[in-house]
Length: 302
Image (spheres, rainbow, N blue to C red):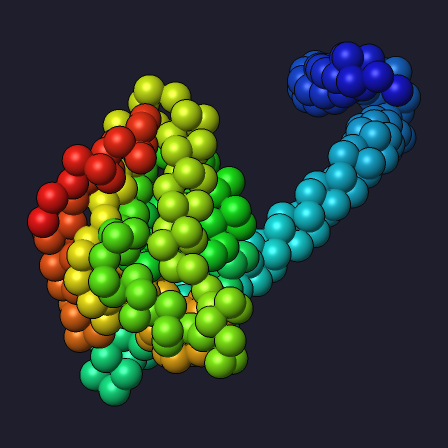
């Protein structure tokens, strides 16, 4: 039965019941009931009215049943909401607890490890590239030369072109006396013919950086700075924002093949020391114009 039909039937039934009650009352007062049906009219009318009420109630059973269904649904919804609220509260409390733990861990890291968070057996190219690609402030590299420049170059290009992050690179001055000393330190056998030519490696890096300089376009070129220094290097540093990878210049071993100390935070004790070394080498360095790096090197004086 449609809603409109049901509604009309209910209204008609109610109207008939109301009209019947009024008619019966008037008929009784005027004595018409006794004239129409002596002695039995009132019970019959009463039965008629009760029957009509029963029919009306029968018509309402489905609707009343739907109300029960709605009540059950509301109850289930209330229980679901209570459960979700309890879960959210538990999750919120857990996150607050985690924040407190992280804060304590950060404080302990700075107090006990001075910013050092781990040590890698060798230079982690993949992880440093991820740091570079996520950098928003600065990328800096301090080396005598960069043996793994080819592995780092795509990430450096992305930082320059896609994110507009300044990149500073410091290399050893190829003609520096230190280059010969580093040659000797890296020599793994007695035969000088097998010695590593540091000067040639620095020049190879400058050539690779010149290719990067051409590839990044005008905007990227403004952000790429290269300097050479004529000084004894203390540490090799790869920095991306607040992340540092620091190694030493050991004998018979490239810096990238040495243990890498990872430091998190330029405001930590180790972070401040490394940043100070970066700034010192940068201040004593000389700019290299990558558009013609050979001529630029010839014009450098100390």
